[in-house]
Image (cartoon, rainbow, N blue to C red; front, side):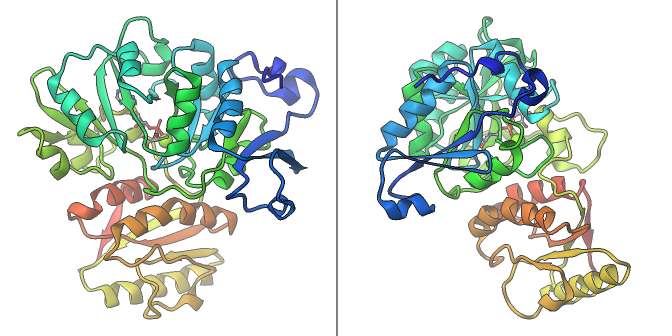
Length: 404
Ligand code: TXA
Ligand code: MG
């Protein structure tokens, strides 16, 4: 198999405009045992099914999938892959052209650095200077897992990877396909969330295809089914004075980290919703994770009252011609489903993990249904919900309405 994409050698290439030809089909690699396609019924390994610009390759084993995908990556192409948090858009972290191609494919602002994904501690040493015993303890405790750690970057790394900042973010994902892919490539993979910039992060291979199949900007995506966590990793900086600063909240909480360090701080930007703050993780300043419609985020300790208010708001908006989505934290019928064009319960409010798994799929469904207004219930500002609230506030342009 020739993995080279001759017309993809320059960052930002759009094959249609550069070559005047239609783009290569985007490959969807699936394990024959979990493939949800028609081809499964033929029981075929190595089956190829092509439709709508997508070529599905059904392979018998995890290593067959990652070996093929690794060939594309080693040629400098981009391959999206599942992690336990969200799907990542992978390219060689130490290859300047591949890193620039990631920025071009996503339309990502150049000041927003990427996380480098590793499958071994030896790969960490290639990226950063490992002098911090605290960082080592965090790696032992939380890796593989949803924690990205900022450490002093080695000088030879592509400037685009760190957006010129002195630290590089490193993480070892725990999804078996992600680990096997990095292992097969034999070097770290830069991987931001595999969405077009500004869109909600992808938690299934279908979400990745929604954003990239028509552009031909990526070689393919590995299907690993829905992501287990559903929101992006916690990003933490290890300071030279021994403190930890959380730059982006995630599944691993401040309390989890406090077991390893007496001084765990939140980046001040995370405590306020002011637009004038400059967050240390540049990605936090963009209004991303957002659907195209306007998001109204509403909270109230009296949840019956909250649901009545949400339904009333939905009815009013529909009377003015809006298409309305209702995203409550309950499947209960207390909230009138008929008052909305899209009714998408995120899960029971006592189950933050379940809500996290559904959030981005729900925001994408709002776009699919052309909803101009999204009315979403906000969970309380307590420990289990902090990362969720951070993502919901991003989607809602930092504003939440609190009912008395
Ligand atoms: O769970 C995740 O972290 C997913 C999966 C694919 O691993 N990746 C992900 O990447 O969410 P991305 O690019 O969507 O978000 C990376 C975040 C951004 O907010 C970025 O600003 C911050 O990490 N970041 C990365 N490198 C940084 C650095 N050197 N200094 C400060 N912030 C950094
Ligand atoms: Mg992202």
